[in-house]
Image (cartoon, rainbow, N blue to C red):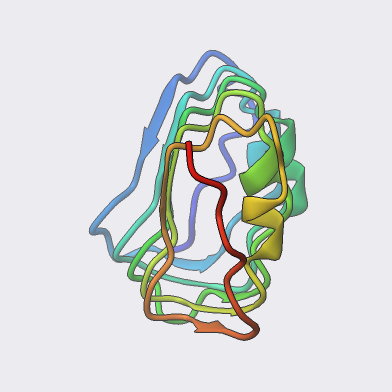
Length: 130
């Protein structure tokens, strides 16, 4: 079935819909889930793009949107710039574009980025030694 709207669940901390038969697009109303720390929606049949409004989820620490082969578009900038995001699993979708933004944010808290098996272009920058 279709993904639930969930607009009235503002105290929801973890959204785990992994390995389900849900279809359709990620509802823009999910940007209203302001308490979310974990957004897990991997291995489904969802389509469309990641709504940019999800960037307003200021407590988000883990984003797992992998193995949804019909999810497309570019990865929104909030994945690189979110204040608390530590892990982003974006592998095995149909994302495109470059990954430059992930390496040009000096204060990013992103510790783990999994993005293989997509359709990226360009080159990876040389990272400074720590």
